[in-house]
Each structure stands twice: as C-alpha cells, then as structure tokens.
Length: 175
Image 1: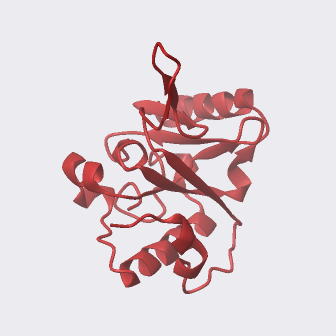
Image 2: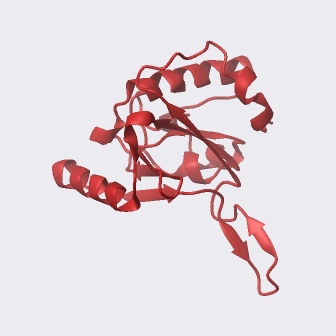
C-alpha cells in the first residue's frame, strides 16, 4: 500500500517523508481496506504485476501545490512509481504542512532535499488523470496513469476514525 518498508516512508523516503498525520491516516486506511477484504500490500511486498492488477493505489504525497491542485511524489528504488501509475484509481494522503503555494516552491523544495540527501530518481507532479486525444479529437482519460485521483488532506495530528471505509466506499472501485 504505502511506499517503503515503514508507514512514515511516503513518496520517496526523503526527509520530506516523515509526517505523523499521514502515517496515522495510512494505518487507518490499511485497516479499513483489509476489513473490506482488499488484498493490501506494501510496495516492498508487491511487484509490477500486482500493481497492474490492483484496482487502487494508496500513496503519501511528499508535497502538494495549491496553485495547480497537484500532488508531488518523490520516487526512488525504495519508493517506486507502480502504486501511483498502474492502478486505475489512486488515493493520495497529503500532509497539511506540506501544501505549498506555487509550483516554484515545490521545485525549490525538491532541489533543497536533493542537495541535502541526494536527488530522487523521479519526481511526479500529479494534477489529475491524463488527457489524450486521437487525430479525430476523441478524448481518453487516464491513458498515462490513473483515471481517478483522490486526494485527502491530513492534519499533522489527525482525529482518524477507526473506519474510513464508510467515508470512501462510494469512491473506491474494488474488485
């Protein structure tokens, strides 16, 4: 479900990854999804084939950008792109303290992290489903990633209900 071996390791295992509020929300989501009978696996336990069959990917954003409504994920060998690109639906937990005003702030934050601890192998700015059209202008959504992106802002010390399934059941398309 989340990237990395520990719950606090969000998008890329960088200094940006430690967020207690998102950590608690991820644990609650894990428990709720398991109660619904969903096969939940951490990234270290899931391969590309599992992610491609999954109906839902759950990730923690390293940053979010208010200006564009984007979430930013920093990827590495320990926090790859499979959970955020292969399933048709992704659920992104966004730590409230990591919401930045502009894309420029996000780029500077990624650069600062890179100078301190090494740059991630990839940086994803996800603003919603991709939109592609053929020569006849027939629009297709989600060709280059998920067709549905759900973002949930998580306060630093959230009051997480024991059952998030009642809140998100209408939005999850579980098979």
